[in-house]
View 1 (cartoon, one colour):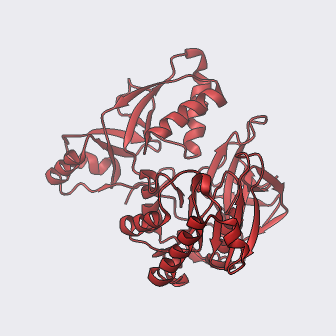
View 2 (tube, helix red, strand yellow; view 1 turned 30 degrees about the vertical axis):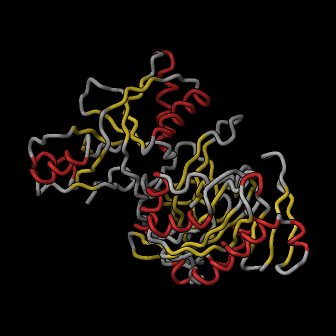
View 3 (cartoon, one colour; view 1 turned 135 degrees about the vertical axis):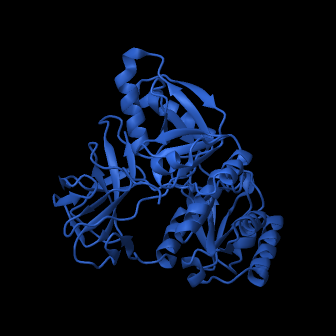
Length: 427
């Protein structure tokens, strides 16, 4: 969970947290941009505890903030990692390490910062919770780290602690039951797609978690959704912008595969008996807008861009049930998603677009699909659209409209979250 030190918990962060809570995922928190002005660290911890109901444990603690940011104290190492300011992004910030109790600490820190640091440390030790890895693994406590990602300061401390504190790869629920990573047959799950990671080659990469067994370069596997066989050539490991070819991988590893339109988010691949893993839930969107291509000569580029951005999960796409209205409906959790889609359509596909906002703020999938909707008869205070897989979705202007539909149609069951997957009806 990445938190901006100045903004604290943002709406998107809360939504991501709800998905983690739904899935029982452990959450590790990195408070970013400590080298810029921001809110008090204790205030941020209190916000996380009060608003998310999570206990917190500060694994490291910042000394100063903004122009006075001097580094972080690692409670694991009982040492201060000093921060030396560099031009943003030019290179990794230099850091020296001083053990707690070293006289150099008082020389390096301003007196006010030094006493503030000691006071904060006493508060953490006396009033803060102890680190409880069982609670961390259950998603009830989050380890907190502070740093500056732009200068790569504090990131190494985070990664080292993550390796120590995080759970080992666990079993994953599938159509044939829970499969442990040590299961002998290879299986993988596509959890992310990214188009144009390398603009020069216009490539598309599918990020695959190896769930069980051993992956080997050039192996042939079955694709659960289509039933086709796929050869997995040119596998890569990816970290930020770095890529490297790999020959093998094991349960828990993440690999990148070239994706010429074969994979979709939520796909399962396997080498043995047929099976399929559970899909990924998608956020209930809160903003809707028709997106239009004013230039007919760019029709193919527009269609390709919308398709690829939808496949990689950059935006949800819905369509009107009116056959004369062909423009896609963008469904987003915030305005930024609209802006990102328009920017990427222009920069990656050369298509300028216009938006026509719609006055809706809630979406609900109909459990039981079109049959259930038809059985309910005419429904007021909503419009019906279909998602990318043709499933019915009701859009509401506000919470009152949703409550009215629930009240007037008690047998109609609605769901705020739908699984990602072709042809899957919410149950």
